[in-house]
Each structure stands twice: as C-alpha cells, then as structure tokens.
Image (tube, rainbow, N blue to C red; front, top):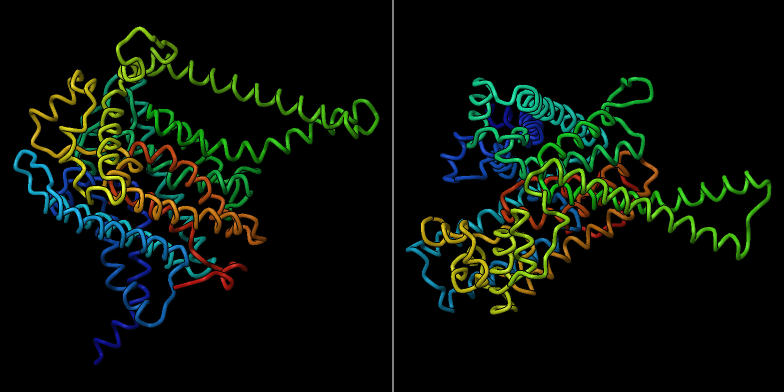
Length: 494
C-alpha cells in the first residue's frame, strides 16, 4: 500500500523527468546501442524509448482519467485507420517477390514506425498544459540546441581550419551515431547532414525564428537587446548552410518566404510613407496605387536577385551544384540528365518509381512498407543507367525505399490516405493561423513556429520518408498544444 502511495506521489516527478529527457535527446538520431536494441540500421533515437515510457506511464492513465487530446488528433487517427485498412487490403493482391525479403516483416515494421510517430504527436501535443511547462520546454530546446550547434561548430572548425577531424571527434561521433563524420559537411549529433538539416528545419529554426520575430525569450538575461534565441537562430542558419543539404536549404527558404510575404506589405507601406515625407505631401488615390505596385515589383525583383545570387554562391561552394545553371535539351531525357548532373538523379528516380507504383494502385496504394517490392518494375528506363540504382537492385540485400514522404504516402496509402494526411496538416494550418495572433506571446510563438514547420515540411517531405523520425511529430505536436490560450475552450476535442 505504501509503495502504491509512493508511486502516485512520484509519478508527476518521473513524468516530468521523462519529458525533459525526451526534448533534450532530440538532437540524437542513431545511437549505436539503441540501434542494436531496436534492430534498426538508421533511426535509433533515444527519444523513441522515452516516448514509449511516457505513453505507458503518463498518456494511458491521462486518457483513462478523462484527459483530452487536441482536436487535430482526430484527422491523424483517421489517416492511421486508412493506412492500416490499405495495408490489410494489400494482402488480397499479389505482392511481387523481392530477394526473399518477407513482406510481412516490412509491413509490421512500417506500421510500428507509424504508431511511434503518432505517439510522439499525442504526447507532445498533450503534455504541455500551462505556460510554465511551455516555457520550460523552450528552455530545454534552447540548451540542447546550443550543445548541438557547438558540436557542429567544432566539426566546421576542424575541417575548414585543419582539413581533417582529430581521432577523439571520430570516437565521440561514433558513440552517439552509427556513422562517423562527413568531409566538408557538418552533421551535428545526427546520422548524416540531411538529417541534421531536417532537425533544424522541423524543430529548432522555426521556434527560434518565431521567438525572434515575436521578441520573446524564455530566459531572464539578455545581451543588450539580443536574446539567446537570436544567437541560436543565427548560429542555426549557419549550421544549416554548412550541412550543404539542398532540400534543407530549400525548406528554410520556404519558411523564410512565408515570413517575407508577411514582411513585404510592411516594407511597401514604410517605403510609401517615406516617399510621402520626402515630397512633403500625402500620396493618395490612383497615384498611390500605381506607386504601391511599382514599389512591390521592385522589392520582388530584389528578392529574386538575392535568391539567384545565393544559388550562384551555393553552386561555387558545393561541388554537386557546379552545373546548377547548365541545362541541355540535347540529352535523351534532359530533365533526369540535369538532376543526375546535380548528383540528384537517383533520388528523382526513386520518386518516379514511387509515383509509377501509385498510378498502378491509385485508390489505397500498395500498403505500408510494400512500395519497394514494386520498384524493379516501376523504375524508369533512364534509372537503369545510374550506378547506385543498379547496385541497390542487383547487389544490395535491402528493400529499396521511396526517399520522399509525399510520394510514399501516395504509393502506400493511395489518394485516400494522402488526402487524410493532408487533411490533418490543414487542420493545423487553421489552428495555427488563429493562435498566431494570440495576445499571449508564448502561445503566439509556438503557433507561428508551427506555421514555419508546415512551410518547411513541403520541402522536407522530399527528403525524409520514415515515420519514426520524431521531428515532424514533436515539432507540430508542440505547436498544437493547448496551454493558456483563449481559443482552447472553443476548440473541439476528442
């Protein structure tokens, strides 16, 4: 009896510790010890183990005691149901054999990863119930992000300054990741540079950018008018550039474009006001409309020039992008040839194979984890010219994957599953749009960060295809959480 009483008293403290560990461990993606435990060759984040304990110790009792989930959980559950139904129905059709790989194991693994992702979202969106908890969470994100960026900075200094990594850096990276350090590219604490970029774009940069725009800090001390979030944002952008991740950079551009659209109107109005003061008269009527259009077009041209300049600089820094501005119509397949020149051809071939699989099974797809079995038939003829594709088909014992969340959803859950998944994302667009203008600054910070995450996801969905990666789920879960928000009572809950 005393033990039960002690457990009840200690449970909130244990849960709080687990939550802190969950958020703090996000920079780690592939710890070797956990990889052996999970039986995974890639995704082995400690956060997966922590979220399992949180589901058992906190989420289940919370729901049994009448706790509520956020309204955005409903379309996510509907998507999960459609995905499972599509997977079950896939066994009523002939799934092509592929190198003796058991399709049941692939299906079970895929369903488990989806369950893991859903659990991340449910815990992340439900645990923060007040501003104190939300502020603590932001502090943990900042401090763990700072450690992650410091390690990335050390990688950059070692390679750019000395042209090599010392052995102790290899040893430390090997302890926290299944792969060692990359030439010229920083990885943070992640498995590879693109995963580091994914972390930054789906959790850290949106939150730091939002806090910077809103003028909010979770900490008491400032350096003049600068906050820790300001410094982390600048360092995070630098780290993102040093990953040399093309998709990661595009994701941040999309994120920043949304902010620029909001900023554009302000810049145009300020310019017109300045012109009015300079001419010492109020600009009005048709003249004001014409000037607004002219100024707006000039700003857009400036944006495009900056974008092209940035791409030109990137083409000089990243050897893979040296042919960025060289496109020839003389090749048999000019578009795929162009992507191949950019060292991107293989990925596009996988996307096209997934798309071809979808066109053959457009309604409910081929079921979770099954797309790779259809690849040998679905690969475009040009794809067989690529060495990596031939090696994966003829020499690798692994099942090929789509390399894109969007194409995977289409191939494995069809138009129905894809529509439900997009419906879940749209439900958050509506929610974040309302909460972004909240009078409570912390609520506004998380909601605005959620909008940035959704913008980044458009591009990141063409880089990551695993449901087990926690960043999409945790980032959107934190942004979805209802804490001290005037709209919370008006929202529909489960």
